[in-house]
Length: 97
Image 1 (cartoon, rainbow, N blue to C red):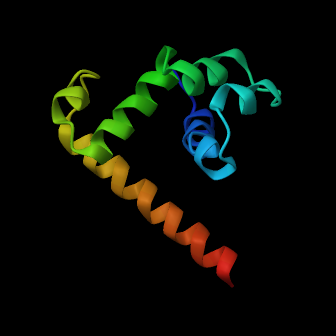
Image 2: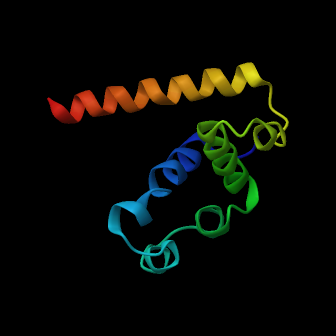
Image 3: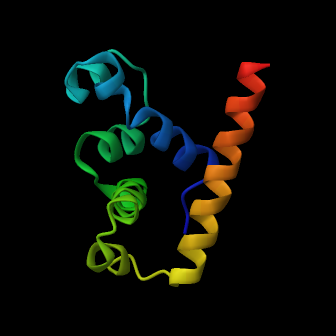
């Protein structure tokens, strides 16, 4: 797609702020200087980044019908998801050191 890896990564990180801060996502987003595409992705799963986020969340839930709506090869999704888990593990280990 056209979305940058960095933007997609940032959306993924920020997607759990509401749970971490125990506040509505809209309130959190109002206080952050985010680009419109990031805001739309986080607030309402709109745009390309929103579709990517929705697909990742569906993948995590095992909602395979929602996953295939994006039209990506299942092997690509699995590979990308495992790469993301490995990166998260590396970051976790680096922070723990």
